[in-house]
Amino acid sequence: VNKGQHVNTGDPLCVLADHACLYIQGKAFEQDAAVLDKAANSDWKVTAAIEAGAQDRQMVPGLPIVYLANKIEPESRAFLFYVELPNTIIRNRQAPDGHRFAGWRFKPGQRVDLLVPVERWADRIVLPLGAVVQDGAESYVFERNDGHFDRRAVRVEYRDQYWAVILNDGTLKPGKEVIVSGAYQ
Image (tube, rainbow, N blue to C red; front, side):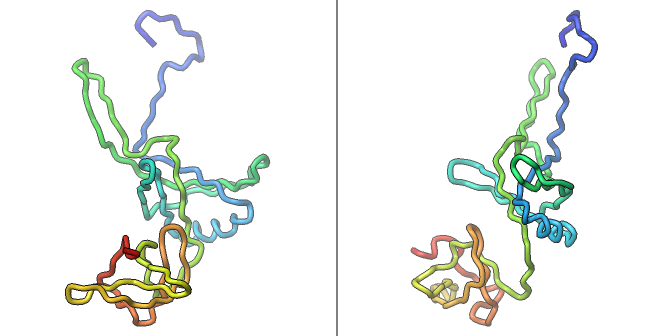
């Protein structure tokens, strides 16, 4: 609204937005509702994979599930849930006339994939997918040993698009250094 402008009753005068904390709306399949209930009740944290560019994704771990819908969407048959995403200012400028312009790290409408844990496995080693080399039926990891890397055969129990879960059978020792990206090279 500008000074002297006529305003009708009920017209919006301004829109205020505080992007310090955003909520990501997740859409799951109807049959996943029980698994999401278990994750939320166990206080398991979600990881958000946020698109940051053409091929890049920014991973934001440790996000809580704050709300699970009480119904299934009738049109899409999707089960909605919400995850809290804390936000930070990355640009804060003030114009000569005193107007402040803030740029936020995450923006409403950005595309996000949510990685929800559905099961806990104790005493396993989790590595980025790029650390594990698949050669036929065998899987290998390259471990640093006195300036060179030794190939270690490992048993992969689970893999997804980001991570590989390795059986902790003593082949790899926690704390040892391994190649985590480009292991195929």
